[in-house]
Image (cartoon, rainbow, N blue to C red; front, top):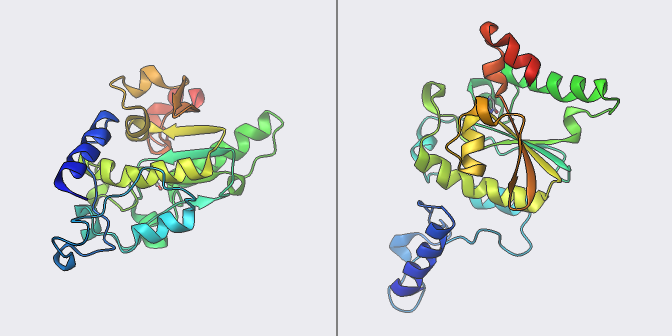
Length: 225
Ligand code: URA
């Protein structure tokens, strides 16, 4: 890619709302011949024939942002890879970081109850294993802080590829971080929850994050969720 092509490419991404972009690690920059080969290789948003396996392989032993420094395991996603329903959380906590699986701690147990019990009440026998669950960022933010905008943008590109590959009929975003990552809205979660919006043509339902619902004083929110 020439510098002009790279500039156009970055402009195109900026128009889509993406400010930060990661460099593919398939060609280490220091080994890139300056004249004969592309200067750097940039990812495409939805590569043709993309699969979850390819996306995981592209992530590799990711060092694209500072979250790699303290993580134990990359938490890619789990569940039914052809599910019509995908849940998107914020980022792994301590339990998820240990196990490499999303939503396995206390918040995860509540999410499982929300999925299985709510559906059962409606007479729909949905199990957690029927849906796909992933997060905006795949590495645990230190002290469970919220992911920073550049971390969300870099890792969000893999999330977008996951969603475009699975092509669910609906996405449920859990909490403000996931809502921001997909819908880029400035609204608060309290105002937006319970509403349908769209991400790339796919209906998105916004609801509270299970960790928020675990706090005792949020019992009312729990009922609403
Ligand atoms: N909270 C999240 O947002 N994701 C997890 O995987 C666990 C807790």
